[in-house]
Image 1 (cartoon, rainbow, N blue to C red):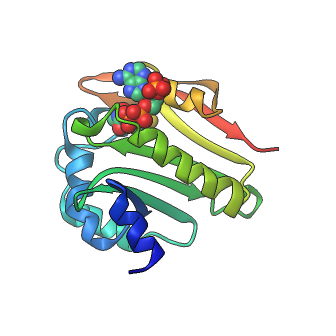
Image 2: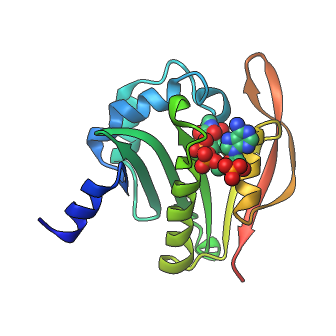
Length: 173
Ligand SMILES: CC(C)(COP(=O)(O)OP(=O)(O)OC[C@H]1O[C@@H](n2cnc3c(N)ncnc32)[C@H](O)[C@@H]1OP(=O)(O)O)[C@@H](O)C(=O)NCCC(=O)NCCS
């Protein structure tokens, strides 16, 4: 058995690149209560939408999933800007299954994607948007070196209201 296989067997959780077979799990994550509300998901999203999303990922898209017992319980993504002069900038998104939150999975996914951003893509800037009342996410981002750059007013709809979002970013200079 390879070193990698033994390592994976020893760990309850594996962080790995996304694959097409993850579509049902990721669709489930994106639409579930406790996740959908804060990631701009919508209950009508179909597995086919997720399949199309995964199929259309390009070289500038870097998606990692956290897998436990054969199921995806978390996902993080980095999208490098396609604009040549923003080639050192990427957007970040993350979600963890509602039943698996507060167990360190979000922090592990963030550490993995930021390692990729810092050491393998050598990005200068990673940016994201987050609802201003999403305390778990804001705390996680602050603890990993992100700062609040500003507030987007009435940025997105959530449950019958227009919500403000923080613009946050992390710089490696
Ligand atoms: C935000 C999210 C990714 C955090 O993932 P997680 O696996 O629950 O987080 P972790 O257990 O790794 O905790 C990491 C840090 O996040 C913060 N945090 C997580 N849950 C929290 C909570 N309920 N209240 C306050 N802080 C919280 C803490 O700073 C925590 O560090 P600590 O354990 O040292 O205090 C997860 O809550 C989630 O997926 N939420 C729904 C989707 C979402 O909001 N995505 C982000 C959209 S911008």
